[in-house]
Each structure stands twice: as C-alpha cells, then as structure tokens.
Length: 314
Image (spheres, helix red, strand yellow):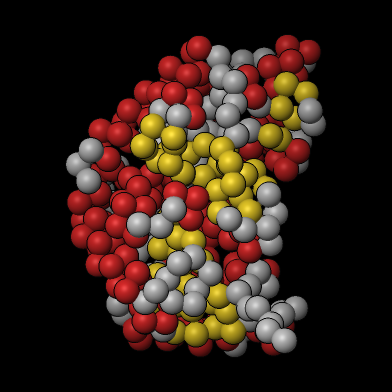
C-alpha cells in the first residue's frame, strides 16, 4: 500500500518565506515543509526554530532544508525570493532585479523534474508569475500568483470594521494588478448575501459619508503603511498563501482571488492578473467571470494594461 504525503517547498527563508512555513506548520496543512535559501545558515536556523515548537502543535510536520535537486517530488513550490522595493520605489520598480533571481531559480527547479504547482509571491507578482509560467513550461493552471488575495482580505477587513461585521461574512474582491491600479467591482460586494450598496442605502444615518474610492485607496496603501511602520509585511501574505496551498492540497474548490493567465476572460488574453478563481487539486480549475458594469470593466482593463506594459518586456 502506498501512502501519499504532501510536500511544500519554500524558496526564500526571509520573513515572508519563514512566516509562510510557520503558518503551514502551525495549521498542519502538509506533511513536509522544505526551506531553500542562498543563505544556507539562515535556512537552517529557521528550520531549527520551527522544529522546536512542533511539540506543542496538533501535528508533527517534518521541517527540512534542501536544495533545488530536492524539488522533484514537491507538490507545491512557493517562490518568495526577490528584490524588495527601496524607498520611493513601487513593486513594479523591482522587476528587473527580481527577473534575474527568478530565471536562475526556475531553471534549477525544472532540472529536478518538478511537475507540481508554483505559487509565486515575489513582486511584482503578476508579471513574475507570468515569467515563471513562460520559463517553466507548465500548464497555466499550475502557475499561480498570490495576486490580490491579500488585497481582498484587507478590503474585507475595512468593510467589516466600517459596518461592524465579521470580515468573513463580507464577500468582496479587488481585481487586476497587485498594485496601485487594482480595482474593486462594487456591484459584487455583499455582506450576508445583501448588496453592500443596499446596506449603505438602507442605513444612511449610520453610514453617512462612506467614500468607496477612499476605501479602495486605503486598501491599496495598506501594505505601504505597514512597511513604513514596521519595515515590511509578512504575516498577512503568509496566511493568504497558506490558504491558497490548503485549497489545492485539500481539493477544496474554494474561490480565492489569485493571479492567473487570462484566456478570453473579461475580453483579455495572455496576461496574468488578479481575478477570483476556483482552486482545487488541479490548481486553477476555473476563473469566476463576474458580470462587471461598464465602468468596472474599464477600470479592470486599465489595470490589466498596466501589467501588460511590463509583461511585454519579458
């Protein structure tokens, strides 16, 4: 009898990579988490630190340090390595430096015989995800960027705080670029099945002065505000990535907004961007094609055009 085990490899043992490992291990999402980093001592130290807490968890997840030759039997590889933005830079400004890193990583991984799923976290994530897709030669459903998964969670948090509702009862997405041009399809935002626009209309005295554009801006700048306060962000994205991994490994058929290749959806082709997608054991099973208003579609296509202008340089 063959017993199948699940293995997740994380490339990059920095704050995002190690936080992702911590999230996976504390939730017991998989059987093994392997760390790979150019700084082998850092990776080994993270491995030791993670191992020492397993005694207090519900599951004994194996934690290891490996190299690219160890990737062949991985189910999922998470890429967090990349060039962080310097002061005054946007995520898009880091593209050239990150491309060089990614090119070397993907080539080494594919030499191992890897045929599983890539989850790309490195920024600018939509463009880097498309680059990994091109370099790897894997089917489009097996290369996924974290996209607007965290942005959407931030938006839901802000809406929940605004109307005093658990954010898990809010259904909302940001779409397009994981960056300044992302948009919100407000026509599809609901709370407990009720349209957010109707909630505002029915409670004018309680929710006077709600500015939807401001909510979008707050969502966009949330990551930068965290960065300015503590230097970088890692807990939120680590938890979002763990949710994506769980949806794949557990065959959940869960809808999460991720960066995936558009092939006619929303009238766009051959570009990665954040859209709600059904995730299961195959990766991206299907993109959820929301019926957007004309204004929303214009905003989404503008955001996609920003991503496309950089994709062309690949």
